[in-house]
Length: 267
Image 1 (cartoon, rainbow, N blue to C red):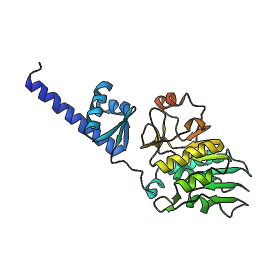
Image 2: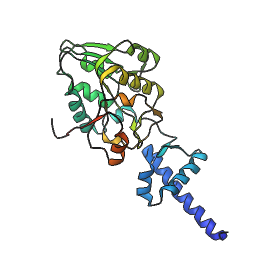
Image 3: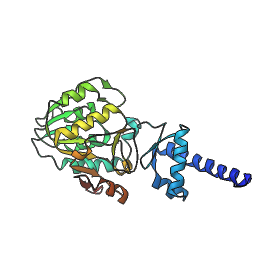
Image 4: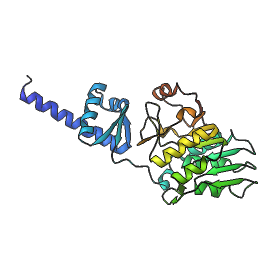
């Protein structure tokens, strides 16, 4: 049996380590075991034990490969609109380059998909389906476009319709292209969102578009959100601003997915 003083010291070390982990998780919203290991220089087994203990104490939510803050929520729209803006514009230009005049396009709500919509403003005779008030405003009444707003109550926090009405309306259509954002792409290669309604709509878009692209800046990689989005295997492209780290690349390798990296220096 270990001496009492040694046991007390080990508990103090564990408590201090767990306080640091909780601070990192709540600051980031989510974190991977690899990131914790890099910061604290302890074994993965030790971190896993800490996360189990912290989850049992309801301090965080343990996930595959990391942890999720119980305080986590998606940043406000006003914050997201000024975060990584140049990267999002570059992603938008690259995504829009896939779309010819006369195509049909589904654009989910989100700040990166808004950047796609901005880059599509020069296109002609598009047929657009969207749940975003902002995207409607950018593309309706321009260049012979036809724009369909998906149904449901508009949520003031993000200027979008979500829920059964929007998802069921989308079920009646098929499009050449579909673009969705990502709440997070986990270390295990899961596409994740912050609400069940958004996850269900994004899953439907991936099924409904012939070419289905996820547009996400590098800040979404290696993170977690509460909801796992279905049909990620139906995505044809992941369009981002920085080549994913090997951990993410390996996790995505089983998907029939082409990763396109936008150049922020190209206007």
